[in-house]
Structure formats: C-alpha cells, structure tokens
Image (cartoon, rainbow, N blue to C red; front, side, top):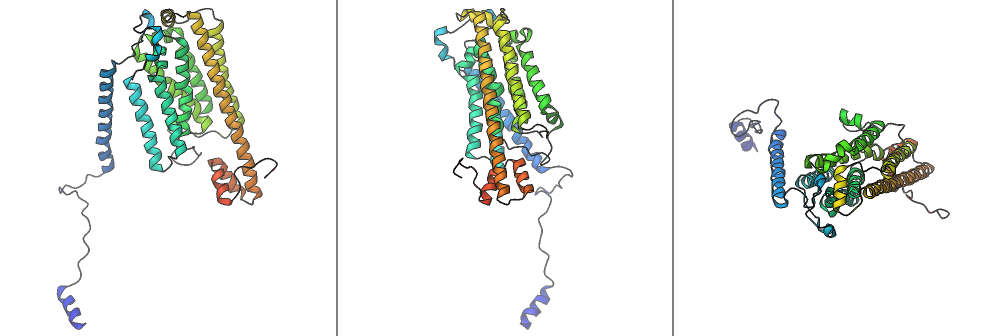
Length: 371
C-alpha cells in the first residue's frame, strides 16, 4: 500500500478530465449569436424547396400543365362530352402543395407522438378530398366550364377538406403553449373568420372576377388556394384548432355560426335559381359546347351549393350536439365518482374527459336504462 502511495506522489496530482473543445475541429471559434441548428436546417429547407420546384417542372413537362378539356370563354373543347370520365390530370403546383403540406403536418404530429391511427386516417381523407378535387374528372369538368362541377369542387376544397385536415391537428388549449401569430389570432376570431369567408366567397363569385377564372390559369389556381385558406379560417374556431376561442363561443354559438354558413349558401343558390340571367360568359360558352343550357347549368350549381351546405351544417350541428351531450354526462359521472371539480373542468377544457374517466375507472359511455 505504501508503494502505491509513493508512486502516486511521484506522478503528481491527477490531471483534470479533458473537456470537449467548444471550437470546431477546424480550429475556428464559433461565432457568437449563431444558432448552428438553424445553419444546418437552412440548407435542408433550400434543398426541399429546390426539390419541389424540380418536381413541379417535371410534372408540368409530363402533363402539359393544364387539363386537356380546358374550354373557357373561347368555347373550344379537345375532348368529346361523352368521354368526360377520361379527364384525369396532374396539375403540378396544386399536387406538390397538397403533398408537401400534408406531409409536413404528418411529420410534425409524429414528432409530437400524436399521430394516432384515427388522426392519420383523418389527415389522409383530407388529402384525398383535395387530390380528387384537382386531379379527377371533377376537376376536368370544372375547368372545362361546367358551373355545377365547379361549385362542387369549391365546396370540397373550401369546406370539407379543411375540416378533415384540421381535425387531425391537436386541440388548442386557451392560454397554453406559444400564443398564435397576431395575424392568425385576429383572422381566426369567429366573427372575423365568418365575415372573411362569406365576403371572399361572394367576391370570387362576382361575374367580373369569376368570368376570367376560366380564361387565366393563374386566377384558377389562386381561387383554389383562397377557398382552402378561408375554409381553414372558417373551421378553426368551431374545431378549436390553431386559435384561442373566446369564452362566449360555446356549443350554442357554434350552432348559430354553422346556421350562418348554411344561410350564405341558400342566398347564393336562390340568386342562381331565380335570376334568369347567365352571369358568367365563360361558363355559358362552355355549357353550350357540352350540350347544356347555361341557365340550367347555373341552376344546377345553386342546387349543388345548397345541398352541400345543408349536409355540412347538419353534420356539424349533429356532431356539436352529441359532443356536448357526451361531455356533460361524462363530467357529471366523474363528479359523482368523487373526482375533484377542478380536475373535471380542466379535462373538459382540454378535451381529455375520456382519458380521465378511463384512469378513474368511470365508464365512458352508458346504456340508458341499464347502466
């Protein structure tokens, strides 16, 4: 033992453990204020953008960049009306935007561990609705000039697809997490969202604006993106996604909100039904080429709008009613089981009543007259 101590004394005190050099291996000191993670992500983002642009150019070259059925105001048609079912196409910009956006949302949910099978199917259904709207014969007939098909495409892009995609996102809890962007917070307020959606819907359908849509592909694409964006704003306060919903915007207010959506559709439909005037020269010319009466096509567009808005409103109101009934009943059963009111109210606010009930052994659903 003495020999060992003598050897240690001869070698001197133990050297301090070498720590990693904060400087890069090249010897240069790290520049203050530079986030290396951001520096790494920037080239990746640039490569992703470059890849998307390359895919757009490739798809444009393969498909010609437009539908072969395009007619517009000139009344020309390169496919016979009897072969409408062949009007499949791949519009490059729309397809790339849909796949990139849905992929981004899916990867974000997976990183958070929130991409359940149900949410994945919801997100996929939203993407499928968008792709059907821009790639299927429905899109060919729409850009071919049939107003009824164009109106159906509007409702799929601007109402059904946004709802499905937003349902795949986490519910926004007021006061938790980073606050929404000031612009999104302002536009996502229920009053602002409804007025913006209704106003832009009417503006896009004005003859002076809607007529050139079939004649200029830039306007065609801009209209699709605008309908989808305003559709997302319309649904955000109802589904409580992305924005802080005011305390007064409960189930009753949401029902009146959705009735307002239905009322807008009814007003537009009545204008189409009873005006006696074909508003859009481009659609009128195209309808004649397809062998349709322009006024009949316009009336059919009104029927499509009011039917889709009725279905949308009834579905939303039914969902809100049953969700309210389920949450009210389950919250009362939790309180009867001795769960603290504060805990129940917090789970109700977060939309986590079912999880709380399972942890406490309280049945999530009951059968009337049995349980």
